Image 1 (cartoon, helix red, strand yellow):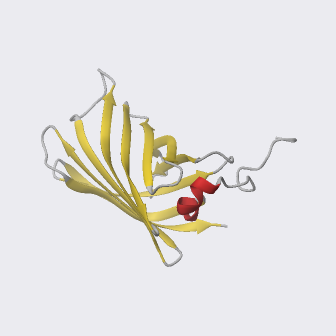
Image 2: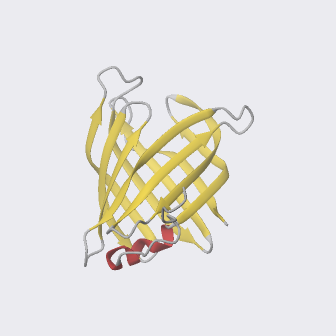
Length: 168
């Protein structure tokens, strides 16, 4: 909208500098999903991290089926850094009825986050997620994300893997 600042041109808060390599829009057409209770699947996804000058990055993720092109999953949230440290907190809401707070650290160009708290709608589908572990790493000019989860029926198991390219 006219008169509003661009999310890509906002000043980056000094506290966010250790994770500023995440800022931008990233896209994959080769995401892979697997879990003991489901058939393996592929997905396409865009993830976006933006800064509006606060010690926090705004996050949005949208995935779709590679052939059918129908939506598959949506997440939105905030990645916050504790100023002056490498400590992170990631608050994410999922469209299937789950909200998660993950905490962890950044070390260079690797972020590792683990579930601190999970809330779930009483009528959300599927098994109850108990733990998630998310790793984001910059490998050359590509972003890799690996998500593992444990449910009330399965131990911690790798669930999603994707390698993204930055969208200009």
